[in-house]
Amino acid sequence: MRLSTIILLVCIALGTAFLMSLGFWQLNRLDQKEAMIARVQANIEGEPQTVQEIDALIAAGTDIEYRPAAATGIFDHDAEAHYYATHKGRSGYFVFTPLVQDSGKAIMVNRGFVPLELKFAESRSDGQINGTVTITGPARSAPPEKPNAAVPNNDLENNIFYWKSLSQMVSIGGKLERSYERFFLDADATRNVGGLPVGGVTRVSFPNNHLQYAFTWFGLAGALIAVGGFFLFSRWRGTS
Image (cartoon, rainbow, N blue to C red; front, side):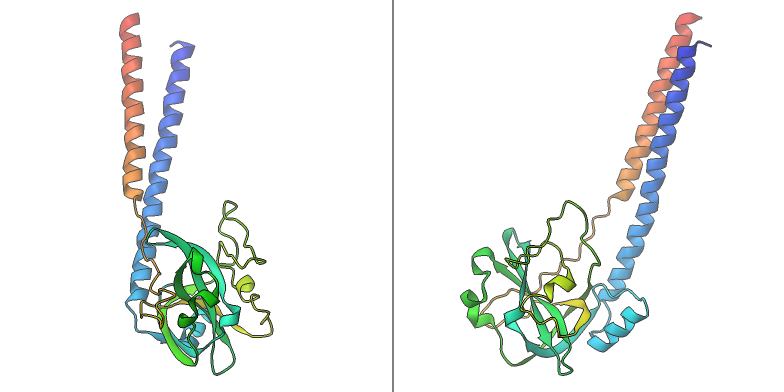
C-alpha cells in the first residue's frame, strides 16, 4: 500500500472521528437544552410566590428563573437604572427601579421598555408611580459576571447598562446603604399609569436546533466516508 494511500486513510479516519464527535456533542447539548426548557416551563406554570419564598429557594440552591413572583412596596424613581435593549424592533431601555418594601429591603424591578428619546424620567413623569404598589411577574436571577468579552462594559457615568449587574445597578442614585434582594423581578404586561414604561418585556424563547446540527455533522461524516471511499476505490481500480 502506498504511503499516500495510508495518509489519505488516516485523514479520512481522523476527519470522520472529529465530525462524529461534534454530532454526539450536539446530541448531548440537545439533552441539556430539553431539560432546561422543561425546568423553565415548570417554573412558569407555578403559582406566584412571595419575595420571601423566592429568597428561600435561592438559599436552598433551587432554580428561580421565570418563577412567578409578587412584591409590594414603593418605587424609588431617583435610583432607576437604564438597560439598553430592543423591544418589538425599536431601540430603547428597560427601566430598572428599586421597589422598597415595608422591611426597608428593596428589589430591582424591570418596569419595562421606554424608547431612546424617553430615557430620562422627567420626559415620562406620568408613569412615575407614587405610593404603594404590588408588582407581579417572573423572577430573574442576577448574573454574577459579564456574559462574555463581546458585551460592552456598563457605562455607570451615563447610566447605561449592557448587562444586568445587580451590584452596579443598585449604585445608581447613591443608595448603597440600602439592602437588596438577590434577584430581579420583571413586571408583567399590566399597563402602567401614563403608558410608560411598557411592561411584559420578558421573552421566554429558547432556540433548539441541536438535533438538526447533529444530523448535519453525522451527514458530513457520512459524506466524507463516501467520497473518500470512492476516491480510494477509483485509485485501487486504476492500479489493478
